[in-house]
Image (tube, rainbow, N blue to C red; front, side, top):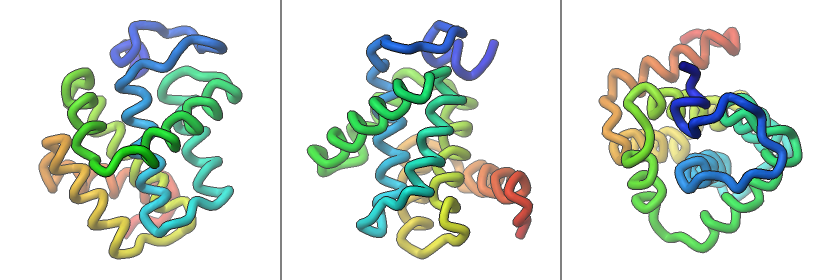
Length: 150
């Protein structure tokens, strides 16, 4: 069973389906990771779009719509807890770790990690009940894929 089919129950790419609340929450956290420095550049948007396409089986337009909806949801929300709560209710432990890898990919989209991004991911990891060693291992896997192993 793939990550997508565990999360949404469907292995088929979607063109027009309404995103699940947990998918919207995950996308909102990805947006928050990109926005922690008060700006979201084109590279970060492209990374988020690609992650949404791959992880949730969306086509380009559906991923773009999900990101726009997530951005609106994040702008309306003052707390990460609401998003994390939905994810905790609907994602397995392995899906949450996969989401943590997605978050690392977003913060490294610009090639570096700043203190605000690191703090945010530590906070999100805590809200998702991901132990620090698992969060760190997710980071190392992303860095290895990027050819930047530390």
